[in-house]
Length: 143
Length: 156
Image 1 (tube, chains in turn purple, blue):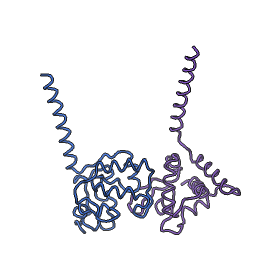
Image 2 (cartoon, each protein chain N blue to C red):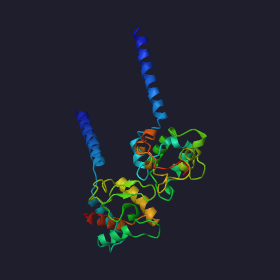
Image 3 (tube, each protein chain N blue to C red):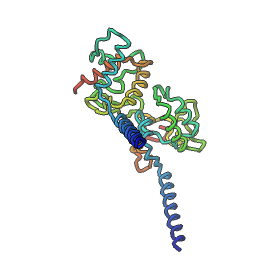
Image 4 (cartoon, chains in turn green, cyan):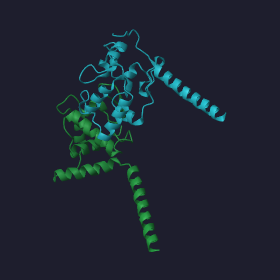
């Protein structure tokens, strides 16, 4: 009897773990989740961090950073619009989550593209503050 | 008797599969691509058919994704292993598909130059296959779906 109960509890625990894991995998992030994460990281790096700025994000998006490209070279001046790869002509879906709900929903994709594109545009990783400013700008553009 | 019939049926199916595969290959149809290949290697350019280059060429490409023709196209290790094994398993085997320079550009293979010349149509680039191969995204490079600009001649 005692052993049976023990096994039942163990099975229940296993099922809970499995279902919990599946829910965690299927759970999509929101742009706000990313903003919260970047804010936490920014604060950890710089205790005087006060919050993100859409204006700084816009400048970051539109300016070159010492190289040939800005974010807008491929994503265009309007992040609500479709872009085009400058070399291959490949169509790029809009970057702003306001125009494209798939943006900033999958951490693996977000990390992959920040890593690549920051390297292309800035020749280094982007800081959490830069990422947060950029996303704040992307969310502020409505048309 | 039943067994003989079954063997014949199996052989017929096998023959059909072989013939249709041959027809597709002869028709320059390399799709459909695995979803991960289109996703990982089709975001910045059309997913290029594995058959366009030899195994050595793909090994060079995948090992150099961090500096991929002027951009950082790095992928994580599990993804790069999956992609490389797909490319290697479907790579071209003829000598004329071998890379001819250190960056292993498809457009510099002897096969590509023979088929396309060395100068792309005016105002276009060879990297964008869809300019002429209208169904390149799906891997269809057949004559049927080919539309070259008026007046373009191989080798420009």
